[in-house]
Image (tube, rainbow, N blue to C red; front, side, top):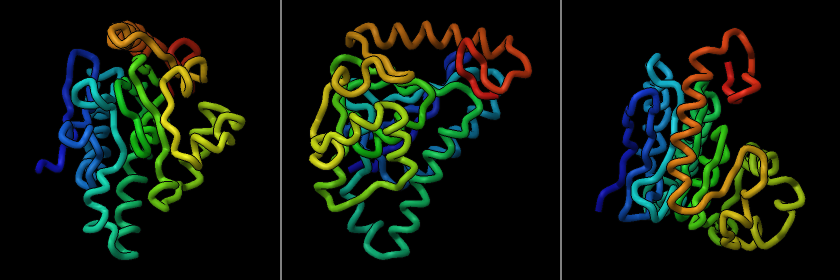
Length: 223
């Protein structure tokens, strides 16, 4: 069975980073985690790219989490766990540090590590069929402080304190998780893509023209 791959596609001024592992609902393998910083660096180094959009292959899932079928192999020792955590940490840091605007275009399942990826983006556009969950508690796993802080920053502390989501691994729809939260929007399934394209156009124009500001008031791009 395929271990999946990270696909980088350039479309005009938009760089698409695609999580392609459809047999496992785009679960992220160790190799995919390692590839993310390289693909982000390619987009950063291309002056034609003005915005980076992250999405999953197909419409069933953005990312359904880490590929747990690999855990017995890649997380079977303390050294393996440290190496795996290093891979996921560097991938998330690459997205967070990207100087170009990043958008998570979410359809279907956005679970665990997939939600972590979405939280690293500047903006989240979720289709109405999106489903969010953090199932780590069922696996006896925990999340690092940085990931939990990003969740709190986006959805708010009162939401995170609800036991069903963080501790009970409850699955929520997009409107139950993100709608109305900071830099996050939920759209009808057919309109999320169109909305993303309009934002791409706005941010392409904006990042091409604003000068010298640390954070653009119009598009939120970090400079």
